[in-house]
Amino acid sequence: MNDETVGPLRLPASFWRAPAVQEALRSRDVSALFREANERGVSQTRIGAAAGFSQGRVSEIIRGTRGVARMHVLERIAEGLSMPEGARQSMGLAPGGKLNSSLPVAISYGGEEPGDDVDRKEFLRAAIAAGAGLAASRYISLADDQGASDLRSALAGPITHYRRMEHAVSSEHLAPAVEAHLALARVTVDQHLRTAGGLSVLAEIAGMTGWLASDRGDQATARLRYGEAVERAQQAHHALLAAYMVASLGQFETEAGNPRIGLKHIAQAESLLDRSAPDSATAWLSSLRAVTLAQLADHKGTHAALKLADTLTSRQRGEPVWPWVFQFDAAKFASSEAVALGRLGELSAAIAAFEAAPNTAGPKPRALAQMDHAQVLANAGRLDEACVAALAALRAGHSLGSVRVVNRVRSFHRNLSVDGAEMTKLNDALRAVT
Image 1: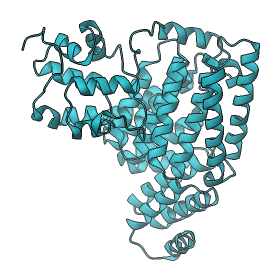
Image 2: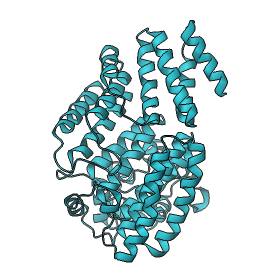
Image 3: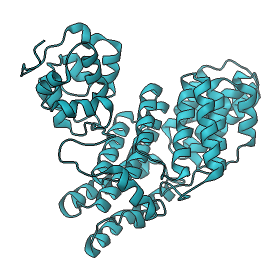
Image 4: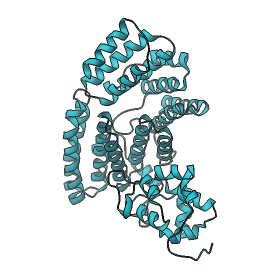
């Protein structure tokens, strides 16, 4: 093929049907997409000519040092590669060249398009040196003057209260208030507070709406909100915050039944952190990696990730609280370890870990962990105990309006064939919440 050829590139239908290409489309991994084309004989120069990039930029994208973060660029790539309709839809682009706004924004992990001259590594070091993880009101004050700082604080203030309320108020009732706050924050930030601090607040609010949407069982909205959180964190040029939001999206995908996509996001979040990152941050990411790898039945990888998370949790070098919401401590590691071992099917070790793990999490995360515990007990033949754990999770999930928890209990119940007093209690409780 002549590398000097310009205009759209036409790839054979077999290219778009290849499993690796299909996966790249679903996860919007432009790096993998370009790499697959390059490995099939299409030069980087030709790819760039079709998609509107220089050869050097294509090389950076393939290596993962540059990413694609804007929807109009995805559209340009799709047109340049003559992407068929099915492939466009897999990537979240609607037929006819219009963007599908129901899907989350593209995610960039190593850099933006031309014009992004921020060195994320240096920024991360500066953020950590300034105490980035202590509290939102401290770390998000980057480059804000006093008036902007006051406005930012007004937007950030309700978030703490919403998080406290989430432990006692149904997601069904809380979500509309947080969504309304997000809508207000969008207008305020876009019109009056286009600062690092304002964009960081907006990222946090979007992330919380993602969590609440997931809790209500609305996965489409959850993906959209988590994607927005990632985009806003990147616009703030805050690598630590971006890593948190990308990892949160990865955790969501794993729990939604897409562990391979989840693992990719977790890896991308890890790539945003350098050696100056606080141990608590890396330990949390390693724990997410362990749980995701366990879901993929990767025993070696799971144990390696658990070992790293354990070491870092014990050491706790650097800023102890990251991000600003929680500290990843020994108790949280113990819970993650128990879940990971359970999903691996290492029943004896998992049961011991669940019994040793303290109940320090919030009510919804604790209920989800109880369902992992219930599944481990059931797999070990301890069915009455499994039903007791599931019933406790159901009561917590129902009282807090957590569709996610209730659905986990329903799924567990459907696959359980047992009689007895505890099973009868669980049957009755499930009928009551139908």
